[in-house]
Image (cartoon, rainbow, N blue to C red; front, side, top):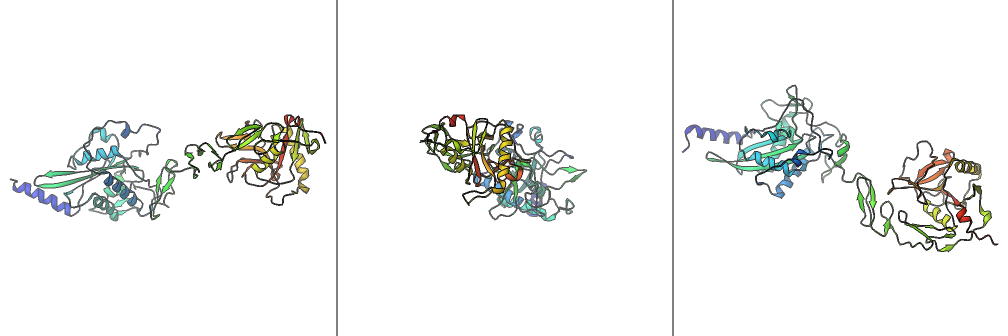
Length: 459
C-alpha cells in the first residue's frame, strides 16, 4: 500500500507529464571540438567497441520511420540550414539508447565507456501509451518555437535542448530505443535517442547555434557534398554523394565511384559502355578501349581486311622518313582515325619538337586557303592520334604508347566539354588542345617506314 507521500509523488509526475515538461540528459562540455563524421580515416569507436545490449524494443519499421522523421524535421528548420547533414541509422547507437531507456531515470549516470564517445542525448518519460515515439520526436522539434536563432537563446522558463540536439547540423548518426517502466503504481514509458557526433556544445556557459544559416546545402563539406532532397523537394541535407561522378554506365556496366570509370561487360566499351563491340581484326590487333583495330602495316579498313595500295606521291610532308598527309576533308576523331587506317596509315604521332615545328609551320601557311572539301566542318584545327584513356588515366597515342613529348597550349589540357581527343589548334599556333571527339576537324595521317615498305608503287 502506497503512503500519502508516494501518492503525491506519482500524481506530480503525472501532472508534469501532461504539461509536456520533459527531461533530457545531454553531454555539454565547455568548448569542445566537434567530432566530425567518420570518413574511414580512423576507427569509429562505435564500430570497434564491444557492446552487450538489451533486446531492441523498436521494430525495423519503427527505426526507419524515426530516421525519416528526423531527416524531414531537419529539412524544415527556420532560418534554413546551409550545413545540415542527413542522418543515418546506427544499430550501435540504438543499443546504447535502449540501454539508457531501460534505466527509467533521468538522473542515471552514463557509464564511462559511453561518456567517452561524446554523444548527444534526447530522453523523455511519459505515462505509458499516451504518445507514440513519433509524437515525442515531433514535440522535441516544437521546442524550436521558443528558440531564437539570431540570439542563440531559448525563451525563459522553456527548454530547447531537445530541439537544438535534434537539429544539430553535424550529428550524422542516430539510434533510438524505448522501454516500459514501472514506477510505484504507475506504468511509464521512457523514450531515448542517441546522436553522434553529439551537439549542444557550450562557449562561456552558453550553447552555440546548432547550424549555420544559409541556402540549403550551400556549406556542405567535401566529404558530404551531395544534397539530399525530400520527395517534395523541400529543404536539403548534406550527404555523401551517391554518384559524385554525375554519370552512369550503360549495358549493365559498373561505375567505379572512386575513379569515375565504367567497368564494362565483355562485348562493350566506351566511356559509358555505350559501344557494342563485335569487331574482328583480320590483320591487326584489337584495341578493347576503343573497340577498334590497329592494323598491321599494309592493311586498312575497320577490320584490317583490305590490302592497301597507296601512291607514293600523296605525301604533303616528309619528316625523318615518315610521310604526312593533310586531309582535304573534315571528320570526327574516330572517323578520321578510320580513314587514315583505310589508307594504310594512322593519325599523326608527334614525338619530338622537330615534327611539331615543321607541321605547325606548314599548317600556318595553309591558313589563308584552309578550305575543306566537306562543307560540314566546325573548326580550322587538325586531329592527331592522341586521346585520353580513362582506364589508364593518361593520354596515349593510337598505338597505345604513352607520350614522351607534348606541346599543349597554355592552360591545356583543361577537359572542357569532356575533351578526350587532341587537336592542333589554329588559334594557339597549332599547339595542342583537348577537344570533344565528336568535333569535326581536318586531320593528319602519318605513314611510317613500316607502312611505306608495304606500298604498291606500280602504276
